[in-house]
Image (spheres, rainbow, N blue to C red):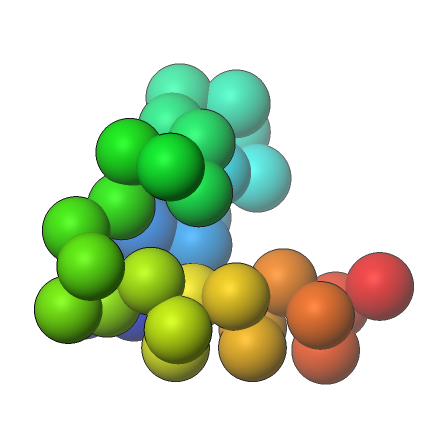
Length: 35
């Protein structure tokens, strides 16, 4: 699920603030690792 949200953020279809709290931390880790 986190990867799905990460892909949406990369495509500018979502922001981190739009990710459900349950997945936000995992998504943020993916974003940080991608930098």
